[in-house]
Image (cartoon, rainbow, N blue to C red; front, side):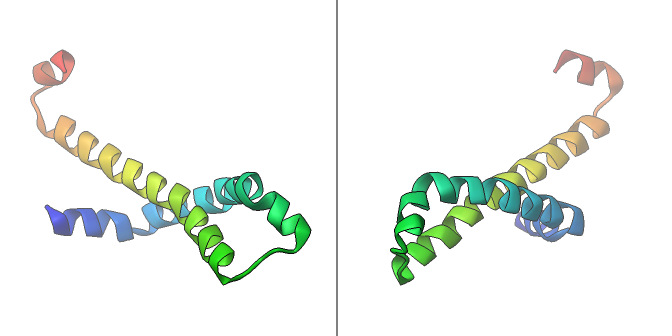
Length: 87
């Protein structure tokens, strides 16, 4: 099961989707959380690390959501049609 998660997380489609979300949503979060410091020029190593971690949040959410969706679809496709209707 753990290997399945890793395989899905590292698949090109999942990783690319995560990167797209990271580079779309991450900068918005950075501006919201660190915009005033950026404008002041108050960027140190700690804040830079926080901004990198901020970019990782939408990446991780996207990857996690993608994995859950793929696994759900795999489970529902292996059920009998009448079981899928009831879920």
